[in-house]
Image (cartoon, rainbow, N blue to C red; front, side, top):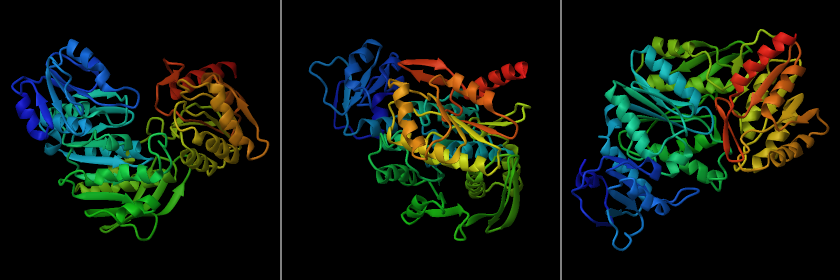
Length: 489
């Protein structure tokens, strides 16, 4: 695409060099630059793109996009803009031909539940005969593409490129997990959303967002991005959801357990094997039986049910789609073992998420509730003591271990967690920085009727330790250890 055609989507402050050059791709990381690419140089959390412009040119960049003016005698075209991230997102949408305009797009935001809802809506649409694609925390999947996710919501060029691939291979819908980072950093600008779903809001990413109000404002942006979006779906029971409802100008479908909710759950029965409840909606009532466990999944199903109705999916396809989802990788995922105790893996890595999953498991009346967890390094340290306090309150036996310590000392992180455990008096707990060994010890001490929860990493297949990334997946490790245990018992 010629640069002059591409630039019609933005308003540059200045341009040095030719507009007649051919642009073959877009990148915001210099190592991704290929000959003919436009390189967007903006400040990241760790690096400044301006420090890599010479490398980008060496790799063949034909143009540079930046908020700074061009250096003297700069050799390639330089485009100056007021906001490089916004401009890159709009350029990406233009470069890939605005693929979101030709499919139905569902955006899901909130602290918890996004991943599960993508699986549910994907299943509902598949049962309805549609061809959905998903971009989310676990992977990016759909017609023409499958790859492991490196972040929940990719940078704009990759996001628009994937949407184009999906569309070209027949996708009818795209379901996106939309993170607060992506909204704050304008990655999803230029995407046309038909539905926007708000799940809930609780403290997370407070190393990025200075306050909960700032976190909420970031999430709220999803509902004000473009004119195509016709419907909002919002959790009526969540305090931040109530606040959002009062500020939305578009049609809003509410869901929850409260009587005011348009899509409401009642007669809820929770067990270790299944969840059953009744959904009331403006068209009537329907009974739901699902393998997804816990009250939080009732909310996830309500949101997905509402999305199905908003997308005019037949009721039978909605119910079949919900029933077809048996588990979500790393989300209260039950590990089959044929042992006389039960094992779950969950992504819970915040105070409220850990409380929610432990309360759910406590409701199954185990003989003992055993938990293995840690906290990530180089992230919000305030949650470590709080998570320790939750574990001390709700678990019978605790194994504190490493999560992704990154550049921090694992023992220091564990000591902060220990402070929270001790706030509940003397509890039986162990400190073991080796995550595999901690899981092994938990399985070795588990007895008939116990529940073992391994929390924090969920679907992740790696650990980040002292600058190195090593393979590690909780579910896989547990299955390996189960085999060892069976041989010894």
